[in-house]
Image (cartoon, rainbow, N blue to C red; front, side, top):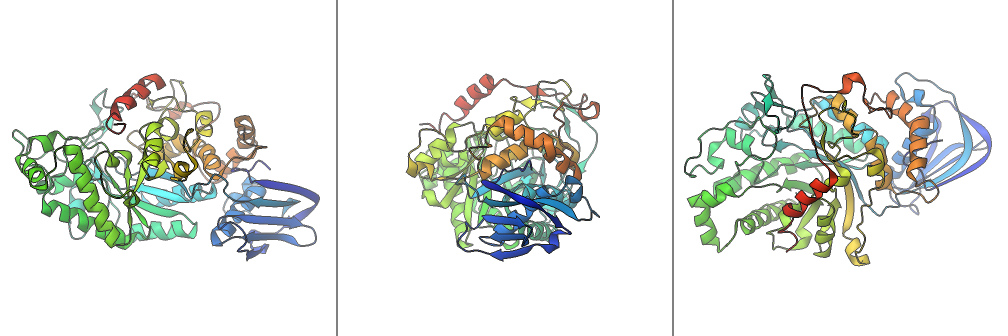
Length: 514
């Protein structure tokens, strides 16, 4: 059958059942099942019957049924009947993770709504249930906020884009931009909800804000001596030194944007970013230093913690929980239950955050960053980061060793992250994401004892699942390696060794480990 994720229990029976269409199945709810669990019973006597612990369970049962029929049947216009072996399948997520997610960055390269919908549809096919939508960054702002019209007019586009990595420092000459209206975003939310996928929006703050500052310069640290008045939307990759100031007016701007986000997205969680915020401007700004003195705050890290607490408190008034990258806990002193942490800087922050009592979605870059290169083949497009093969992703263990049972319960989710600096199109995104996301989906759902080896997974992938991806129009990376047209010789990369990256992470997380 070659199913991905592999169900927890499959019991063959005698006989063959012909299924004319997926509309001919009998479905019902069974509250004794796990809410995302399901059973499928295929027999000559009863035909095809499915039960789910909830509507989500029924949806996942149907995704498994879609894998039981021939891959060609996933194409538009396909018609049955299809012959199914009689069997009983019983399945439910066994990983203990309630958040099985994927983050997609559309700030570096805008993705049209139709491509976002297709991306979500394929995630749902693999039983992933959370879509983390990274909507703003230095290089582009993707939300139309009527109260702040220049975010769409100015912050949503840049004059050019970097070709390859920042180490090569070459640029194209093409303007790039785009933004989503409220109706666009509501359509994405509704489409995802039909597939039992929660859309978690991200507005990154107080760093990664150069695009917004380009639209409204008063949000920035304009009193820093020698600072150029207008840097525009950033056209380089990496981290801009431009960050928000911490005036009451700027905090009100952030709250008003978050209010719009809360109005559009029903998710209980809203991501406020918080990663990679350089403190140079805060250190050089007389007004920021005066604000720190007024608040009795000694360090810029503690100031960011204060900022995070203000935003988390505002989200709480809207019935939302703040979600932030693991930097947010470095200077944060508020209640741990107010913040959900995305632990990304290597394997260490997941355990550190859990031991401190924070709930954690684990996504260490060395296991879960799908922009990292897939092989050492010189034909890989813009190879960056460490080598992260299909097998590397499949071997990811979301719950670190050494945690007590109580600490381990704080690992509530896992996700893979897709940063698109070097992915200029949906076709390129698909190449980088699949089939590695298939491996992650099985990790997040929960491997079985009988079929939990990488070799078993690889056989199932190559036997039927790649043909399913073909039918779903996914431009996945072939197992034989990149094709000539997959490469980007005009956009050179910057590969790293795992040892070098881990040494970088050690320095990056020094404050977190204090």
